[in-house]
Amino acid sequence: MQVFLLWHSHELGDGETNDKLIGVYSSVAEAEAAKARKLQFEGFREAPEGFLISPMEVNRDAWSEGYITE
Image 1 (cartoon, rainbow, N blue to C red):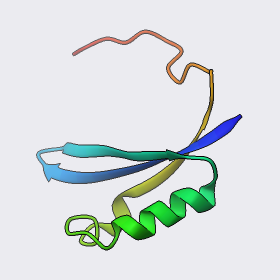
Image 2 (spheres, helix red, strand yellow; image 1 turned 90 degrees about the horizontal axis):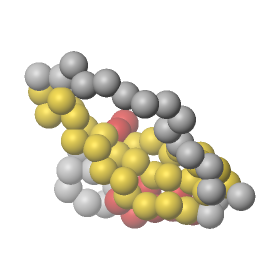
Image 3 (cartoon, rainbow, N blue to C red; image 1 turned 180 degrees about the vertical axis):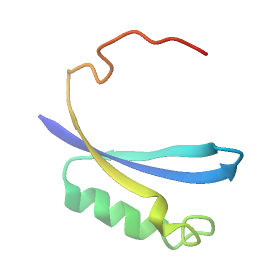
């Protein structure tokens, strides 16, 4: 089964971002409706380009490898 994550990211400066998971939805249409709701609020309406809808498979690892910190 696939779900759709709605994210919003906004640049803080110095290469840093503030990333927010808005919610998880059963369809792209539901995620788009949530985006439309959020665009009514301060912050989101000033940065409408920051939204991203990301498909995700349920019960599947999204990160399949290790990581290093530099």
